[in-house]
Image (cartoon, rainbow, N blue to C red; front, side, top):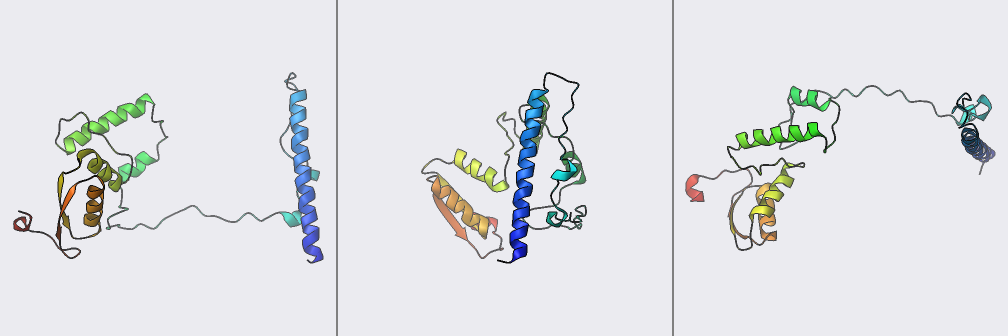
Length: 187
């Protein structure tokens, strides 16, 4: 070990001790003067308690994140509408807040409209599309049910796996990835 490394280590150790003792000292002062509001206890370190200059790490220059504009056309993630981005910049609301519950009810009514149903148990799923899919399969499949699965890619295989885990009898129609099915083939 070189003499520079060992001296830097000793300096860091003594600086840590100085910070710790200053912290304890401030805590004691706060307790002692808590009854007297006229006494101000500062939380900044005195100049003599600052770490030596050779131990300070320079602050890196970090620019504001400015991602390039891209058109995402894959299965996910996808581009969000500018209104969605604007809504995401609003202050957050807790999940038990009355404003959140009202927003959830409005969302449920929009889901009922989108799916053209009157079912009051229409709910948004906070998760990926696969999470919602798994929730639907788990809640609508009973052991012995038959699932006809058109397998022409990854998600068809995934559905076969999900349905079989819930006890369904899986009927597969397989085609190479990306090829479609005709109505006659399904019938």
